[in-house]
Length: 246
Image (cartoon, rainbow, N blue to C red; front, side, top):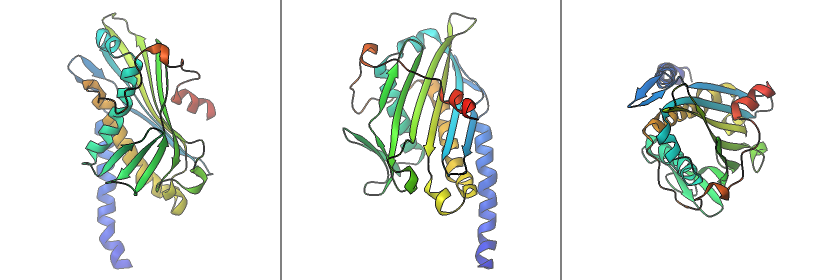
C-alpha cells in the first residue's frame, strides 16, 4: 500500500498543479477579434447533505449587431447543443451526448454506460434574458438522493447595453444545482472537489471562452423558431439565487 501511495503521490501532485494552472489560465481576461472576454468566475460549494451547487460565469463585450442576430429561441436551442458538442470535443469523443425526444444521455463512448441522464430541455426567453434548463434524472455520477430529484443543469444569458451603443454586454452563466455527486457520497467531498468538480470547472471555462467565436452548433431537434413560442424567464440568475441562499 505504501509503495502504491509513493507511486501515485507525484501524479496526484502534478494533477493538482496542472488543473489549478489550467483554471487560472482559462479564467484570464482576453479578446477574440471584436469580442472582449472578461474574467471568468467560479462559485462552487457542497452542503453537509452532499448536494452540490456550481456556477461559472463570464461577461462578453460583443458587437450589438452580432448579439441581435442570435437573440432568438432558435439560437438559444443551438447554444444548448453547442454545450454538448464542446463536451464531446474536449474529451476527444469519449464523452458523447445521445438524444431522444424526452431525454439527453451523457455517455462514455455509448450506452448503456450513462454518466448522466437529463430530461428534455426547458426554454424561456424574452428581449433581455434567455434560459435553458435540463433536469437531472439519474446516471453513474448521481448518488441515490439525486435520482429523479430537483437537480438541474442550466445555461443563463442576459444582454445589457454598454456606454457604446455599438457594443452589448452578454452575461453568461452555467449552473449545476441540487446535484448529488456519487463520488462525494462514496468517498469524500474533498475527493469530489479535487476531481470531478475541478474538471467540470475547467470544461465550463473552456466552453464559455469558446462562445466568443459565436460558432453555434446546429440543433439536433430544431423545434424553436420565434420568441413567442417560449415563456418569459422568471426569477433571478443562478448567481443571484446562490447569493440569496448564502
